[in-house]
Image (tube, rainbow, N blue to C red; front, side, top):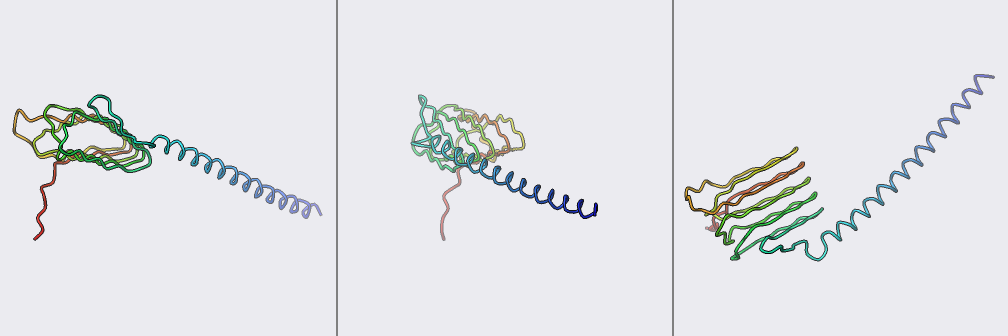
Length: 172
């Protein structure tokens, strides 16, 4: 008799535990879902209306949970500030006019930045990376008077690639 009572109590406890697990799951799901909705609204506000601003001649780009391609052609480039969060950004400076040394500041969190530079410039990179990397694939320029693009990067679980302008392809 005592054995049957214990078995019944165990079955009741198991049913109660399953119910509490279900309630915890539903509560957790609701919290996560609400957090994602709020984050989406904030990201939309962050990206809204042009996440490009200009501080004098310095361009500022901010991208969150999105992708962005920027191409600067036949304009004088004086520098940029790039901030990415869980995003990818490609900045094509291949046809930009770079007359003097310029600075590009990159803060990159869980994303990737690709920078294409003209053929006639040198690239100097200073980076702090945590679980990330920086690749300088720009060919060496022997011209002592060539302008230098100084890239200052802070990466967290992210990467930056800098490469030279690709020559035009000829279709045969």
